[in-house]
Picture 1: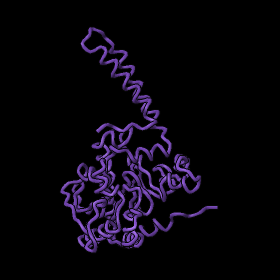
Picture 2: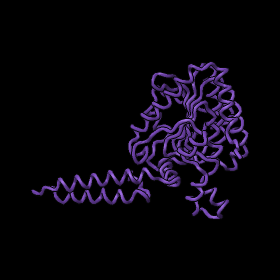
Picture 3: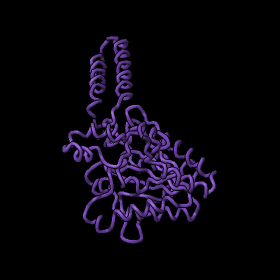
Length: 318
């Protein structure tokens, strides 16, 4: 698959292309251009650091949506072992956009739940573009209750533009399904760790996001509305999405300041898609650390801390 190039990455790509031209030019010829190649490589690295160290909120949104970015099942394969998928909500059907099951992460047995997107038309139709139906949230809750029953922690990987807003979802009560999850996750008697790995869109994300520890990859976003949706409402045009992204304070750094998340998980330079294995290693370390700290907390204290965590959100200081 051809790697998607984002607009702000073009200076880097142009330098890389020039470097390849130099290498191909001297191939098979008795010419020593090693000093020029080294200088070009140094310039590329310096440009990468400059570009990726100064990303705007909108640019991070673009990275979070990158077509090659690791999705839920990629992380399950790289950071977890012994994954056994469990399907169906026992009420209506299975939802392929919300896969879930039993797994092990660094020796810790758990229930892992996440939202899955697709990389081509066929897979996106199967996964509904990562937008879960009501049965997806009900399946997630069924597995959470299973985790509670067998004293297993719950790990949720969030990556959705939002819950599916179609007629069928409304007929099967999507709002009620999400609301029940919010209530039940707040009182679930087992540790919960959530991590935003890509898009964290509105109630669709929050439906599996009530957790004792909320982590976030550094190029993910977490927001009550997409930048395009916000721009359409406030500026009457989607072209103002970059301004909306900045106003929403949806990136990890801003959310950590606001105490809406607990930790930022680092990504490889340029984004998780540049080195999925390294990104998975960071995710595994962060999730494992959170789980090991939570397993020492008595259940009653865990529930009180979870309640206090979410009650203090949205405080206004005058």
